[in-house]
Image (cartoon, rainbow, N blue to C red):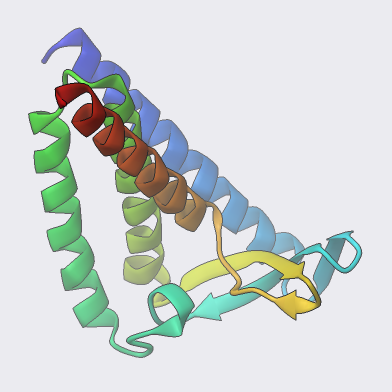
Length: 154
């Protein structure tokens, strides 16, 4: 195994551990309480998400696990194919970490622990977790990477 691959694996494991620890803390400390971080903007509240993003496919745990496993396989394949591009590596590592973090929840809990809640312009946004943040940031970085790559080709 290449030295670079070991760094990627360590990075992914670190991201997964951070997500896992954040969820354990929320489960043990919040239970049914809400912790207001910034009034009318940011709070932590423990939610059991039985579905995917925004609760879609709620209650279809087996289907969500299967979809996630296919998604993980695809991301690993893309990570191998783009191992020479630093931004792509970070993007795929974040996406993979988030997918694995939420998969762990689905397999061992039967739901995903969500807890980060924002209120923007008086409207409460969907509750999410650290793994979801990884996926979102990873996708944004991947789009930037793809844009930069296409920009340089012209």
